[in-house]
Amino acid sequence: MRIAGVLLAAGAGRRMGGKKLAAELLPGLPLAAAALRALLSVGLDAVYAVVRPGPAPQWLRQAAPARAGGPGPTVVACEDAERGMAHSLRCGLAMAEAAGCGAALVWLADQPFVTAAMARALIGAWRSEPRLDYVASGNGTVLTPPVLLAASTFPHIARLEGDLGAKRLLERPGFAGRVLPAEEPERLMDVDTPDALAAARRYACRYMSP
Image (cartoon, rainbow, N blue to C red; front, side, top):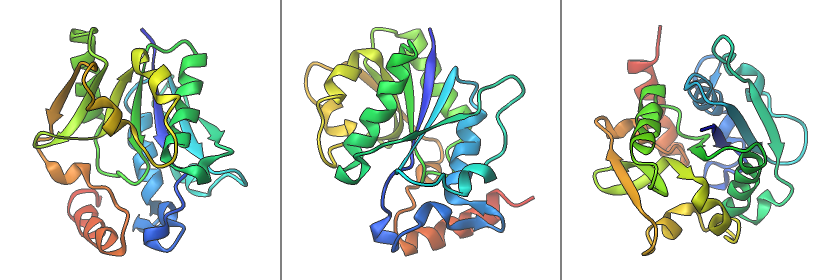
């Protein structure tokens, strides 16, 4: 069954003062480029980078190319991204559904430390239990992105509005899911404030430097 990757990169970055995704973790490596680089290495059937309307962000060109034979990202300009995260998510999942994908791996562009191995674990858990509507990463038992969403969730997510993400929806009765706790919770870091960026740069210097 085909699985797409959806990188949510259309946020305004207000808590960071704007242009968050272009902020460098390491010299020459923007935050979002690190996340996209990892997503492209997972080995998915399609990868969609959901961005705001306008010129393509520079960081898109700074991500490493996809694995040999793998897809590069399809850039999706979400026209109503300013209305909240739900709309960006809807744009990405609509592309996955139109491509006939049975599931989508949703990853935040400000999560630069998630590894391909962590993503493949989500996929493997879902393939072993295809009745599941989702398999999420977890900091302890707290559901957090990246999350594997089965196509059974797409119609429900298509009705979300504003900043309501998938988490509250998936926690409702009626959805069957599983949470895989991260062995290294730091890798689920969501870099959305100046303090978080400073911590991320320290982490990157320790674990990502050549």
